[in-house]
Length: 304
Image (cartoon, rainbow, N blue to C red; front, side, top):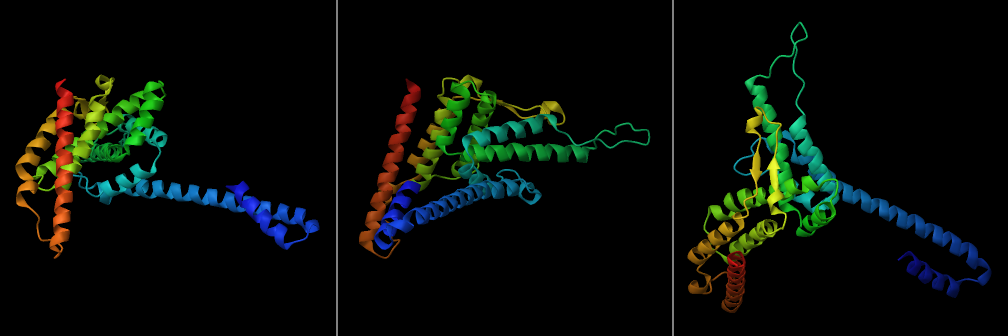
């Protein structure tokens, strides 16, 4: 890009200036161009960092982690923005650190007059476990909203190439399944009837992410195992059940066929223009039929 711009500037200078002045003017122009491009690069880096830093700083603020169940609603907007901005490698490293924090970091004990540690109170234990849950759910949210391309990048770099964070990726994949299954599907879309084609299509897109993970050749290694909660036996642990993908396809199919009667109900008056309403209805029918076709294909893929 810099060479093209310099060539263009060279042509302008050549047409309007004498040849004697050309070398010094070109040197100055190239110097200015290099400074401008360097400033642009720094600006872009700063913008990228802000896109990551702002959601990172806000996601775990106390007011956004106060209520985590059934849906961490205040964390999700920030987690989604972070997932869209962070690179696969940066998220793998962040996940490693946060998982290590969950397992190994505890607040310092208070001490008595003799310097002996005082056991945590029940309120302190509740607070500790809540904070660890918040960090775990933050990882779930980001893992769940990661673009599929980023998921494939981390699998390629860490699993296929036996990277430093191979085990972390297995955990990230389990967190992605948990968030998609428990939050995006169970607590959201599938908590009510799938009564229009957009809901059906969205449910299909969500479960495609689970299906992809469930079919990975190394699916048997995908699991979450934490140890840092109090007591230790209350620490979240889960091994991937690959059957969850098929179960979800069947649930989505049942609701779609039962609740989304888009074909039977005909065009609805929405815009005040009958012709446009009919066009919109046809778009919805097409979307619904495509979603059903996808569901049948995926169900069939598990029957082979």
